[in-house]
Length: 368
Image 1 (cartoon, rainbow, N blue to C red):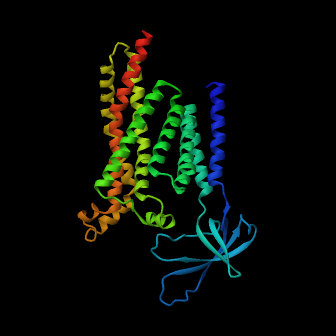
Image 2: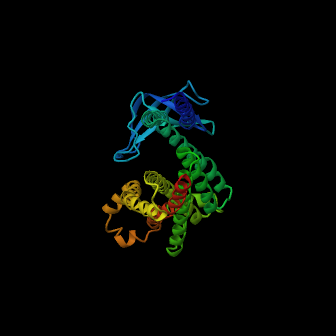
Image 3: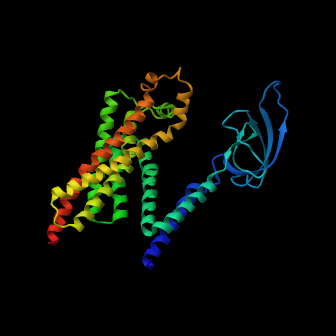
């Protein structure tokens, strides 16, 4: 590894460490602050026969306007509830402190996880940098910039009334070019992969829009959709659904496109005598193999995220027969997301292979 590569890795690690500290390093914001459990004392339950347990928890406040003070909070424990915090002395928690009518209200919201998440993230970043070197650092930087574009730019513009679909297309174009240029540089391979990715994502969006129209999907996919509509009635939930399909399909389509572009480039280098038809055929053969694994990858990702819901349906077969499940709005939306992602990924293969076969056969003709 030369000095330039070491400098890039060092600069990348510093930048990502600063970014992670900005995201996870906050110890106080609004009424929330970091605190440590000093003492836990069980209190008598004022409701006879209730199985709930009440604790008085003494907290040492570490951040915010009340830093350095010790405060007491009531903590409730309901047997069988998934929301119970099994607190122990020494635990770091996220406390909330509010002033209401000359009275200080102190509560315990969650375990304080931010710093541990930052450490876990940094561990993974160091592992990637050790194994993948400069390529890994570039990929991680591209990922961080992608998150900034989506959360810092796209989300804010949506709230200001921008068209969700047009904004998603524009964001997808920027993310595609940025990622592939960082990974492959300003090369023909990056150009081919960008063309294939953008085409596949647009087709995924068209498939999603068409599916939403014929299925009469409204975009109301859960409580968060209703809450969002109440908070901002000008937002188009159907548009946000399609925008989500475009962004959701981007990663898988980009993966397929760069794989096809890279493979065809290597085939063209190994055998410059191949025609455009030969290169296209090679790309399609490679693409068919990729489909076999990527289809499972995409569907399993969606299935894993919905495992809790699958178990709920399995336990309540009488209330949720298959005919009911398959006609629920949010189930239909999830299926459309999966199908649109697959459509974009599959259609990106011939498009990328076509562009790559033209670009790389012309390149080798010029060399000859």
